[in-house]
Length: 597
Image 1: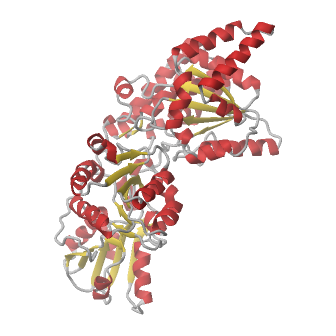
Image 2 (image 1 turned 90 degrees about the horizontal axis):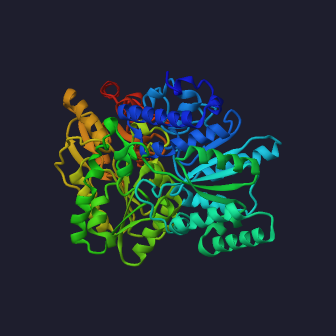
């Protein structure tokens, strides 16, 4: 029997010796690799935190103590060691456990998460409630070196220089976000404290300092050295005692340090160095590739993003002042090759989505042609910047919205199902939805010519074979895929166009239209089909979406057109396959045929 199988309660870990804890870590890594190989998931980030999480369980009692993960894509070992070992094989599958902390899934998950930057605010909120209600538990905040410098985390940690007791920020420093960490602040913080000389001298002072006069002088000198050579004093000034740097894979040392921090009661910033992908050689050597993987540990195949660099390099030849921007997602949005070839025309702002939008606005004001590449779920964080900094000034910024629509096993924190609703009402903004790469390429060129704000939304997943017969032009016209009578399907995006063609194969005499501009609507075609039964298909929530815009168009123009809106239900959509998510939201041939007259 494995050690893991003997853990019936998270406090059983406290009964193990150091060698058994190391064995437990190895077993956890094996299980994580095995499960991720079958289901896909976040591999490298989870392998890097296993030893640290084991040490945390040894020191703290998570039956009452709270641990809050930033992003949460490093919490697999925590899930296994709480109440999800027996069903960990269901990770990221329909009806199974989530790939992120989910308070609806388990009481051990203190705070649901999936986006970076939320943990320090949530942790301080927990501390405030605990102290206000005279309760007694520790709040442990695990935040990565990239997430820590997200704007919300910096707001939370700087709003007061007073911090609560029994509050521990564990700074998980692996030098990476998804790609290599480029944050300037991070570089300064970590530069000196990770050098061999600093740590050797630090250890020497620790051994020699006592209560004597010389000891006190050495302590002052150590503090002077710390203040002079590093930004650790910044942490101290915020009401947190800086402690570090320690090896995040040395369980024995971690237990000792965590016990000391716990007994001190002081608010503490604990700096831990870990290796992303630890224990799996390929993931250690190429942690970006193994950050998020599909089944069989393969990189996911995303048709649109896989073609981004090639298209952008061609566009760069025609538009010398073009600049590409991303927020810590260079590989995910497909800009890796473009960044290598055109390094001076590429900017990665790290996990700072708001900054990426306003930075593009400044570039546009200065005469450049910026294109921001960002996932739909992360674009939500830049809504104010799109409204206030881009649309209000009518700036020529192009935003390419990747992962727009269902995202499958990443689940509710990452679904791209809201962008049409929160963008469509913004003045000056044009919204495109290409059904294939050829349309996407033409739309990018057209977006630059429009000289105003443009969003282009497209999904993840493999290629859907769809031909374009009518090229989009400056009139932003929709495309008639088929002309018929009585019924019209308006389809937005590749998956919806594919579904519309399935209906067409069975019911020949219908209009099928590729509604490739969500805003503005094609008024000419809408008037042409006003006397037909209209069905709209979109991967977006029903409220405020494309179908609602079509219905409103007919009402404003006093046409009694029958409009059937097929869109995503008013709910947060859990992890499952994209195929299953489509079916559960009514995107099926049978459901669409029922709406025909």
